Length: 443
Image (cartoon, one colour):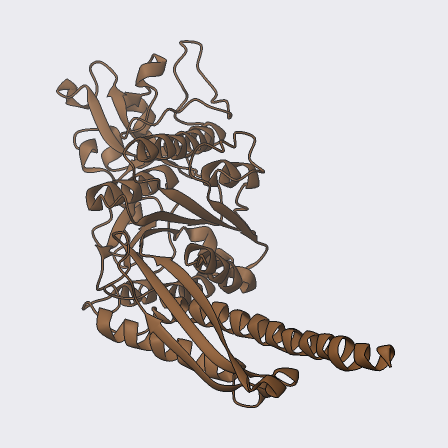
């Protein structure tokens, strides 16, 4: 008799209650997963729409579709699933999406007590920061030689499509021997006329590789925007090592008219020696090709008609404080330049020009990290290196991006990302991976 009472009043109710609680917990877990996924999907959905209100509507619709696909009447016996999407106040340049959902969970044993269902709720949230991106893109001749220009154009366009007018800002700087601000950073980068996609379509590959000057110009554009609350990104792509440098050379006394002590241009290796070329491209290569235009500062010099004559009139300045590019980035670093017996850096040695170009870019990246952190901009550098004829140097790009693999990694400074694309067919995946990381959504 006692056993019967135990079975009726203790064991069966306990087992029944355990079943009900287990069902509720299973539904709660499913609901929470659906809500979290819907919040992330909504944040990604902000990249659709031409206006901020249409972007919010697209995000809300995406969240509802995701929720309804994962939580529906009848699943585990649940009924009446509902989700409410809201956009609460957020810090500047940030969007927060909150989702509150509920369902009715069935009961089995508790029906004996008149409780036929239980209300189960879940809350999810996602945050998406707005971004300012300056794309600093190599368009040197080695890309044309490798047949990679088309792949670069398509990959860069796909990258741009991941971002949205009105919320994000994108600019484009391309560089060969000279550099060019093809599209100044703007929030209407997709709808402007011409827009950034048009400029990417017009990209042609010619010239040497003047990385440091273009990279520094990209940083100056982010400084001018000056939005500390935004994710500020320099996206740097190259297929080779820097082999030119923008600098001031000293006039040898009695040469070049003797009026100016310094002449400015891009020092690049030529077939018969080094030449001084134009710094900023006014039009996109190759017609006309500004990368073969002699620097205007060469007027009156022997190199005005033949760039390889530059050494007959000009020389590198002395003293480490003068061994800098036009932006103050030092020529000295982990690469060693060849020097003359006088101590001056040689300007007609191809390896030396490459080494000082590498050092200038490396030092520029270190300055960007330090200065931007001090100013609250926290500029992050994302790098893509392409294998092939020029072969981007892993060590250099790791240092520029400040990744843990770098031999100068500084965890106190903005950490970026570096992706190596073995060939042009891997470029689209590389650009897509960076876009995904830049748009990473936090929960």
